Length: 288
Image (cartoon, rainbow, N blue to C red; front, side):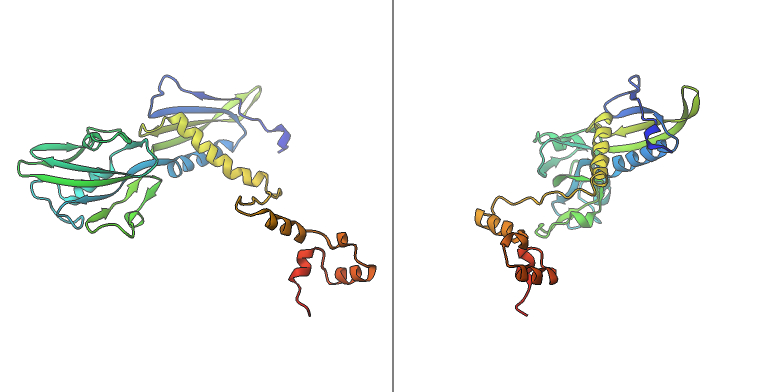
């Protein structure tokens, strides 16, 4: 196929009738045959794996040393509480990790919204989500750590070398994307009917809109592909600011060609015979 004749997509349509803060349908057309699956699959994989989000990465409950135990006055055991905490969706406003401490007394229903009462560094997107049931005997003290990350991170990777005894790291699902689907249909351009239309559906947790998610994913792919576009262009080496002028002068001298030294013809021929082209080559040679 002649590259110059490739049909490029004319537009991206947003289905405004169904668009919301957590759902969007995007239609891209026309595409050359095969490009629908190529683009759709790449965007789907990046959307699901590479967008940043926030999640609870560890908890500490008074009187609890591990997740396989029960808490007096609490209906759910620790493993059930952890499973419920994993389902809380956050929009983290601050970039640094946030620690939140709770002191709850029963009887009450402990819902996700309790985590937001004393902080403005994040927003709980599902505040009514059930975490635990406390009866009248419950005296519940818990500290959670909310962090930023990407994709899925297992509990062992959320351990810190200096974490106190009693801190339980948990699996974290950072991705703000709930689901991504795509399918490809045939479409017409003029008299040709062998073009494709890509239909991409994105569902988020509400911490970012589907169009923002699509933009972030496309930029990520662009940044990676850019390397292949400019693979034969050497980037100039960045010089750290702490290197002084003398070091720069020496570096420039080392790059100087031996032809610039105004040596005798005999000396120049000897250096060329030894494959010495720059002063740096000469410095690297020993006296032998």
